[in-house]
Length: 243
Image 1 (cartoon, helix red, strand yellow):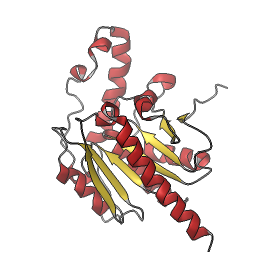
Image 2 (cartoon, helix red, strand yellow; image 1 turned 90 degrees about the horizontal axis):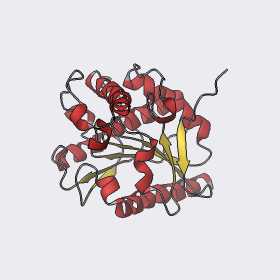
Image 3 (cartoon, rainbow, N blue to C red; image 1 turned 180 degrees about the vertical axis):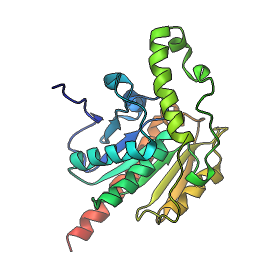
Image 4 (cartoon, one colour; image 1 turned 135 degrees about the vertical axis):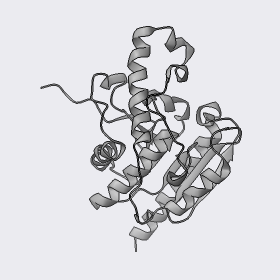
């Protein structure tokens, strides 16, 4: 029987006091957060179906079904305090993973961090049948075989977003929501980011230099911001457990 590929690709020292489970943007693979790695931040990036080591895997599950799968993987791999983080479309997946963890009765994340994506009640209307070829890098468009594979993964991710609806009357998460964005991102406003505050208990909104991909354009301040938030809450939880 074939061995199932790992659900997360890890980088950073295994001695880190906390883990950061990361979910990439639509069409993105586990390598998209490579610029954020470094220092003492231990990051596990989700390996989504239909790309990299999972080419050939089914890509048709809905977003909440995919989140349930990854929530079980988080439970299996979280051997210390952890947070969940998503960039762009990955922010919505991370949000649903946090809810699925609560539904499972699992230990909650320290926080939910979301980047470059509006809160669920402000989602744009998407057409999963639109021509997404222009969303691929030029170097990929010049390679028809690779473009075909990545386009299928991108289309599946967009379809999940287009068919997503947040359950009615669902209570907020019992964790802070840290929303971050790029000051020059034309598609996500500060109000879009601030609206995440109602999805958790407390949190913050911070903008950084750069556009929609500020996370990889200016990784150092973003890494420092996430690490400080995660480690502060990890220390606070450790102190509470001692009493």
